[in-house]
Image (cartoon, rainbow, N blue to C red; front, side, top):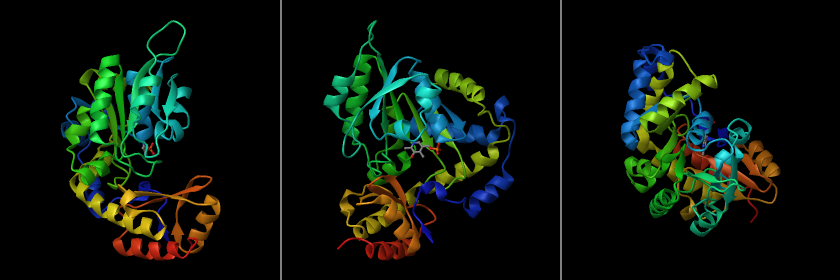
Length: 331
Ligand SMILES: *Cc1c(COP(=O)(O)O)cnc(C)c1O
């Protein structure tokens, strides 16, 4: 079985398992885990943010991160298929007390006109906009990369309106290796951001929230309040530190994704990272036909399937999967 459902499926590498076994640890709720502190410092430096906080999951990093810049009763604007909208089980409304409105863009990019029109200033009778969230790469749009000039525009727009920018950078690493835009440049355009270590980079768990020192101090309290204060979690941070050493291997995933796209009738040039979105007549039946042919893929809509390449998919696996899937495509 070749499993292309998600890049979260990766298993920790032998080097990660050794680092985990040997990790120096302490009680992270006391701020005394050296491996966690080292990981937080390194990631903060990479993105040019003052401070960082290790999180059990990307969803918690986004919940707390958006909450740092949007008070209950105010709104965040984002693209209609954003992970914070679709895939966090309504946490931002259910737990954060915030509302949202969305724009739609075929590639999940910013829509400058729509954002300008959506923006709502503080008035006594309308929900006011507090932040704009952008996802890079954009998962459900097919791993698409936000053009830097849009991020520059967003930063200027947000500061002119007194808004904050939240970046869901679960796969910002993929954007970075593909575009060669420095991580610090991506970090510069966000007030608060999250990055994930357990997707294509292969760590077993963990995301990092990045922001100013003052905001991270507040985030530490909220994380504990939500039950996310972990103790000798340097065991996990040790794997995260190894993850940071092999960013460049993500390029292989991107090549494999193009191979799979071609087999599924999707223009390989439209594939910007490790995710391929395939329109189909009936997603559920394509998923079961693929499984019957030894390839697991996922339905992300009634007529959309998603293929994701990752560390545990070799070039040979990608070729085999491409061959099997091509036979299922309507000619
Ligand atoms: C995976 C993902 C997250 C975080 O997911 P968790 O499973 O909670 O770690 C956040 N944003 C995007 C775009 C993702 O793909």
